[in-house]
Image 1 (tube, rainbow, N blue to C red):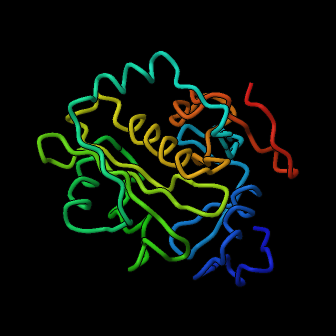
Image 2: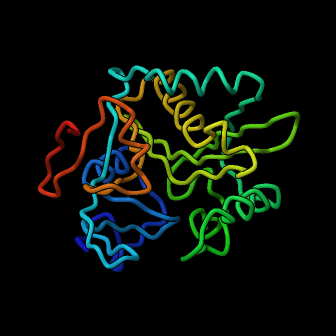
Length: 220
């Protein structure tokens, strides 16, 4: 792991000054709480070695696809709110429902990904997109915020409402919110160069990929 000067030895950073997260995301870094990391390969369960591609979306150029517009239409009956990030019993309960989709490497808690006791401001400002259906929480996503960029941290949804495409919906709402605040980039995490479970991110166009040599390219 490469360590930049602002990150302590071991990849730890407790508080990022304004503008630092913009630079770290542009260099392929991600974090869970104060633990920062980046890696270019991943071993799949079937033994395949996959190349990791950090992604970013130029917000001014994004236009929803036909299928994404259908998801927006399908969810006209939900209530969406954006607020400072929090982890509580309601969100933990939704996380456990979300994890029913997994068969291996099942995380124990939402705190595996949002471990800070003050996630709305450490190591950087963070908001949540909250989706409710008839008052019931059905999806939540976490979005880090810096001067020019935002970065999707994690998202969960109720598998009983999977037909709604709630993971796509929260990402579309993150895009809308970031654009309304003049942000330039949204970093939705990573996808693999080959087929993988995060391929839905590649449907947001015009997406870019990081080549691990400091350059960003249009995603082909």
